[in-house]
Image (cartoon, rainbow, N blue to C red; front, side):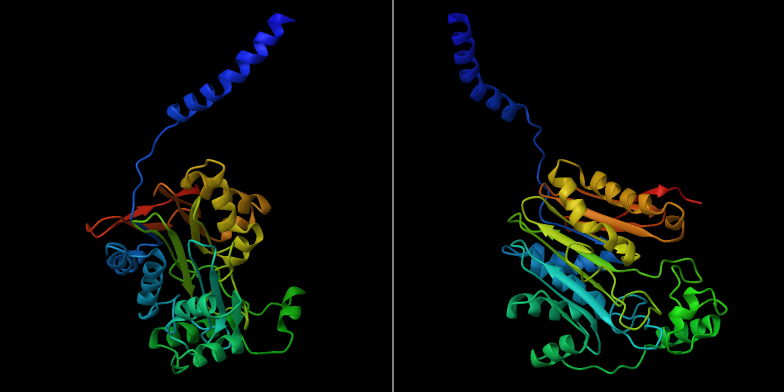
Length: 349
């Protein structure tokens, strides 16, 4: 009996010592901050704008990601901002989301005529009790908040691309055409948005940006004009908190680019952050999310692209995609940043 008591007593005394031992043996990682990571090589100029904010003495990650997103919304490109490709009825509708280090978040969906949807999303976050506003309501809120209504005219590039798509798809706004199509009565090319453009680039180059400031606080932003030639009213993952963007200041942040419907099925960004919470590296966490998508339908996954990026609380970053070709931009100093090619499930070629 005495021996048993001594064992229990010494065991109890040793527990704190074991805990201390584990604490000292735990691998320490030098924290890289500030840092900003964006999807695609087009994220380099976005990062450059964000970096100007982050390198200031009190630069705030939320301000940085908003500034970066606004910068690409100012440009004419296929997939972000009012210069992006329209839906199949010829209207440009924008989606955007933003999230800070305190779980505050805001988003807008199917917003028309407003140049900076990311800033409207921030206003939703800061000035309303809601997280999401959509369509006419989002436009009404934007105008009431002082945003200027822009012309709905397509940019020259978008108009040219749209006219070419109309010829190929033979799309006409026929009522209930989706039901006809689902029964196999497809017109040449079909009226649905293609997964890839004619040049092979994905039809969903969302700009997702995540950052950590010098104080160690995380934030993220995501902005897009959505899939070109989508059905009127279609919304992907980009403005959905937990799918296209998620930030947990204790763990990390994640965002991505790709076919939003597939990301929505697995709550991609949230899944990645939770994997990092469990100790996975950013790349490992992104890989798990990609493999979860592929597992749903391995054959279908060969025909669309999804790529994720993530950073953790130590400033470590990583990415992973379904197909080769997804790259991302990283800036953590005044050196202009670097572009990295993400590892992928399906190899090149």
